[in-house]
Amino acid sequence: MNILSRKLLSQLGLGLLLIGLAACKPANQSNDFLATDITGVDFGRNLSLTDHHGNPRNLSDFKGKVVALFFGYTHCPDVCPTTMVDLKHATKLLGARANELQVIFVTVDPERDTQQVLATYIPAFDPSFIGLHGSKEEIAAVLKDFKIFAAKVENKGRSGYTIDHSAGIYVFDKTGQVRLYVDYGSKPSEIAIDIEKLL
Image (cartoon, rainbow, N blue to C red):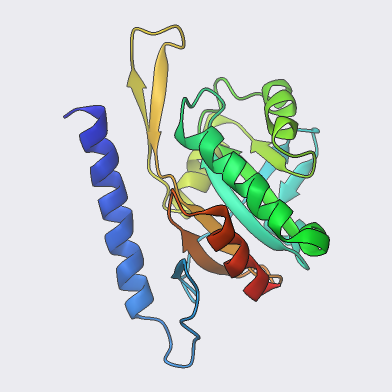
């Protein structure tokens, strides 16, 4: 199975899961978000990692802010930098309320994405963004809890391997509840509109 096929299968699987979760949404929940409303899902609670400044972090640290959580890696050639740029533009569109949003990047590549690497990579997009890393075991536990697909793919390039991974963004409201799943390729304006509704 080639890389493209694996990516399509992983996205299809996650898409079907999210469609099912959306269908189970309580009847009184608003359905006016542009992203997939996953309010009420029972996952995405375990996030205890170290940020690119060396500080221990977990989701409760960000209560009072909307959190946009993206899983990626610094050697990613396309999806990750594109998504980070989109999040940068979405943040700017929030104007004066941008400080009520926290963008968090969680590495799926703990072998290469050290604190030092993230400390260079993350601020290049926006100084307010936070990058999280951990041991292989810690990252594996977080990926499992957030139902993130990530698989190493060996190649003959300079990097030695790439990683196929889920490419969407989880958005948490100010109480720390996961509310939305934003598909890869969503426009910054669409992301900003949904975030504003949660602000």
